[in-house]
Image 1 (cartoon, rainbow, N blue to C red):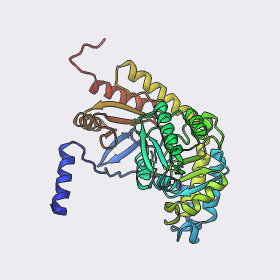
Image 2: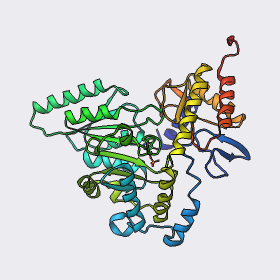
Image 3: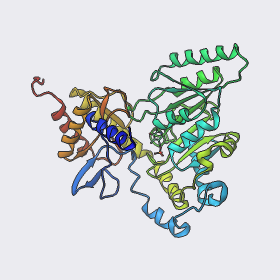
Image 4: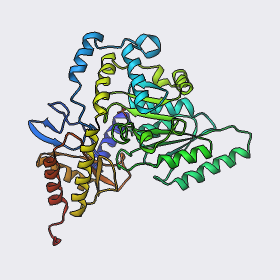
Amino acid sequence: MSWNQRIASALQQRHAAHQWRQPVTLDSAQGTEVEVNGQRLINFCSNDYLGLANTGGDDLAAAAQRWGLGSGASHLVCGHSRAHQQLEEALAHHTGYPRALLFSTGYMANMGVINAFAQRGDLVLQDRLNHASLLDGAQLSRADFQRYHHLDYTHLQQRLQNFRESQANSSRQGLAMVVTDSIFSMDGDLADVAALSRICQQQDALLMVDDAHGLGVIGTNGGGVREHFGLSPAELPLYVGTLGKALGGFGAFVGADSDTIDYLIQFARPYIYTTALPPAVAEAMLGNLRRMKDNQLRQVLDGHIQHFRARALEAGLNLMDSVSPIQPLLVGAEDRTLELSQKLRQRGFWVTAIRPPTVPEGSSRLRITLTAAHHRDQIDALLDALIELCTDPQEPRS
Ligand SMILES: *Cc1c(COP(=O)(O)O)cnc(C)c1O
């Protein structure tokens, strides 16, 4: 087989399986209403949960006047500016950690953290539905990599126990690491991080939580999963937050104690070998961090989530069991999910069809996301359309 044949056959398979993907081009800024191909669409697929993605433009312009565009180098060469330093301090303060370390993206932070810690002979245990960047990070490491059933901490404990027994019977000195999403990106449910923390302390395992969808959304002050569960930094020693979701910007960071941050600076390759974020972006993020602290945004968002779920469940829509702004509607088959997404599009709603390999086979879904910037009538209009499209007209409706 030649390379051309392999490419053609892989593309053809993706098409046939209704798994083809391609980007859609926006002609407007991010928001609840966007323009695509001359059509106005009400947007229900962004991760901009607090509606901040299009608020920091003035901050960014002012910061760019001072810092220009490029950072010039990696953090450890000469790319680490006062703007980066201030953002790290502000993020550490907001999430309740002694220190924070910036990464260019959440994907890189996850790859970097897992690989800095997990070595040959160690065990990395992950929830089966963790984000791809976490799974990829473990795969790249030389550690043993096992997945436990989604949210099944009995299964996790068994695996940890097996590992400890196998270690006791050998001269090896392996360590265990447990990694989970807080809010699962395609399901919207929340890991019981308090339970995980207890298990990890009992079993001497290192706990890492990816709070990409929790930071800004959960916790009384938007402090994320650690605040939500009332854990101390020692009880949740490795925290990953991203700046591209509720914070409405770009970038990511790790929150941890001082030694852990120093360790990452030495050993996390995606920190060491990449250009630092543009300093103007780092400075502008301070503005969004300030905006994010407004608890009213979270109140509005929570109200939307309650309203959406109440009406959808009453109408018998097949909503997944989610407490978060991610409210997936389970469909099952790829082609049916695509068709629903397209029909919604014709009616002016943008809701992405999420299909394998992003989610397990047979669990294709419409991933509906709500934001604090939505208006109640936009949400009601979406519900009307969903009820019309998803409720079988043959079935009598009471
Ligand atoms: C989006 C996401 C990431 C990646 O973050 P980026 O900054 O976009 O690279 C990591 N983990 C989870 C759970 C995510 O949803």
